[in-house]
Every structure is written in C-alpha cells, then in structure tokens.
Image (tube, rainbow, N blue to C red):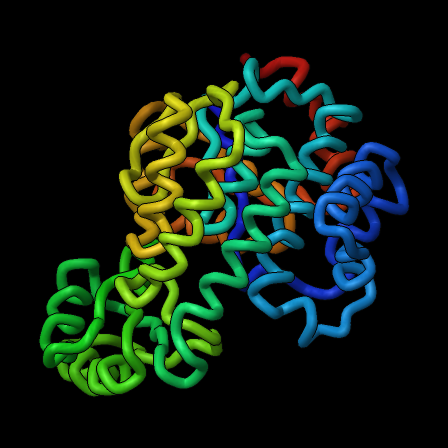
Length: 319
C-alpha cells in the first residue's frame, strides 16, 4: 500500500476545529502555541472560540487551517508512529494547503509557514477591491468546457479556470462582470449548476498579480529545505523536491490554477492507494473518491481519527 498525505484549503475552516486535539495532546498544543508566537497574537483563540466572521477572514483562515493540519500531523507522529519520510509517497495540499504540505515535509518551518500565510492572505485580499472580483463553481462541465465558457465570458476582462477540483467540478475566477456573464453561458453549454461562490476575492486568477509579487518578496527571505517526501505542486500537478523550484511554484500558485484533479490522478497513477486528508473537514477525501475511485480517501482531524489509525497499526506496517 502506498500512502499520500493531503492537506485542505480555504473553505474547510470552522470554529472549534482542532480544539479536541489541543485538549487531548501536548504535541497539538505545541503547534498552536508556535503559530501564536509566530504571529504575535492568539490566533488559537479565534480558531477555538470564533467569532466565525473573524476566522473566515482570509488572513486568519489561511494560517489557521495550516495550524490545525500540522497539529493533527504532530499527533499522528507522536501517537501513531507516522514518519513522513518513511510512510508518505507524496504530500500535497489544495491552495494554502500546499504550505501545510511543505511544513509537514520539513521544507518550511511551522512559524515561517504561519507568517507566509498571513502575508499571503492579506495580499490576496488587498489585490482587488471588494466587489470587483468573483468566483463561480461550474458543476457538470469538464476543464476544457469550463475554459471555453471563461473565454467566451471574458470580453477583454479576466475570466479563467482557477480550480480543477474533480471531474465535472471546475471553479472560474475573474472580474465580477465577467463571472456573472459566465453563469448563463455555462448553463447553455450543459452545466448542471453554475453558482457564485461566497468568497471575498478572485483567487487564482491574473487579478492576483499584486499578491504574487508580495509573495515573491516574502518567500525570498525564507529558508526552504528539500522535502522529506515529494510535494505535488498545484500549478504543475507533478512532484517537486528542489527548494528553489518550490519557491518559484509558490509564487506562480497565487495567479495559477489549482490542478487538483490532475494532482490526485498523478499520485494514483504513481501507485498511491490511500489518501489521508490531515486537518479540518473532509472536502479533499471526498474529491479523491471522484478522481481516483480505485483509491481510498479518509480524513484525520480528531482524537477519534488518531485512535483509529493507531489501532489499525497503519504506520507500524506501511513502508
């Protein structure tokens, strides 16, 4: 059996996530304390207690989701014997989750990942004035069809495929006017649903270029190590091990599409039969079942999940 560790992105956050881990395990508490110290504030209080509108702010949600993922990972290491270098064929994360994956693989220190995600969240929010950008999910269209919709709707404005999540689930991003034009076009081309998403900015589009430049500057001052397991990058859907290539792809990721369907398909094609989503929610493990039905997808985000993995002896037997 070959295992991949995958890490969720924005949208998976909810107030109270990770709290049971922190209450039960010192290794989880240490991660939240490390993130709080790196940011100079008690982000953990917002994660555990809310309010929800504060947690969902992009600048908070991004480091918060990373903190929960790394807390769960540290508990798996301490309680269930996980060794990323030995047990993971690949690591990967959706959008901000790529930073979680890099921290899990030892490429980024957790405090650096927290600070980078705070900068990333701030920069992405500030890149486009609120109300001028939008994103929409096109359900029932494949990537080529979604790209054709975006091209027709653009009319000289930005409108592009932003997330290729699974067969028949593509998200487009761009100016609000172009995205609104895309909705009836998508339905006319056979989309089962075409709906605006409740997001505050047009992520993973060319409109995010100011945020990409902010990340280029921020990443230039951060040490990136070779990962202990190959990291499948969002923008290439292929594995990276070279620190400078990782740095460059993280800059490109801000404006580039998240090629999640292709990333999962690549890992499954390389022999991965079990995908373990580490952190909040079950979004990615659900997508795995649509992209690679022959593989299994599961989530680990609670003490019960850790106990299940420990009782199975997964990491005692996996190679």
